[in-house]
Image (cartoon, rainbow, N blue to C red; front, top):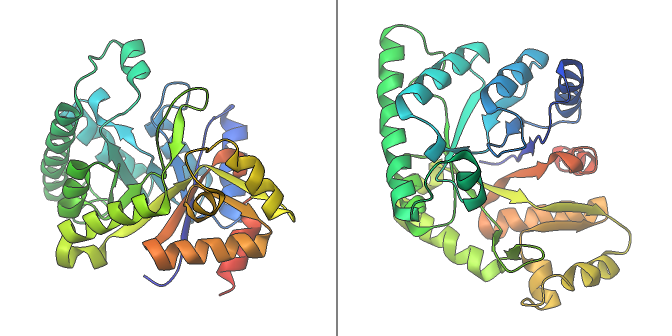
Length: 293
């Protein structure tokens, strides 16, 4: 995999015209994938994904990622097959086990141990395989044998599952931490270990799987050192050098950020990067700079 891919995780719809405008802007700015998270307060994934496909021609469309604990596997299979048709075969199916306890409480779904949530994720993958086989027999699936599968998460068991089934595996540079931020940035060494774990589990398949990283923030600045010191104040468990090496925040000039992206690709294998919608325009010059290579 020589080239990069860039995705944007959209946060809001704002009505049909605004959604269409944002999706077309993402396409114009060079994003390869328009993604919809599956969190309360965000758009409903499938209707938003289908509308995104209708507004654009080139980008692929994906879920980032569906909380499978909230989805009946059989009914989800119907949604995916229909979305594959209505996106003209541009769909990428992102799945995860769910990690926000407050969303389970708000929806009335029981909060279960991670092992049980991953059990359900595995059953969902099996059910989707059956739905794809039926759809192929009925000539109702555009992508054969199935839409690409994206699995997101850092746990041992999820990475083993990704090693067996995923076309794309999404790593998180963050882990849960204390308030007020509620998160902690993983060190580069910690991510090294997670990527190595996945590659070991995947064996020969590892070379076929695309590695994704979600970027928390993008800061374009001519004062990289000053910005890094301000950010470092929020990450006291890392040294400044460790913070700068961690694949969580991109900061600096466009050229400095492009160099950071290349470093992440060389060190971790991350050639598919996702940014949040607030950085849609901010990150675009980096896409342009890397696309010239």
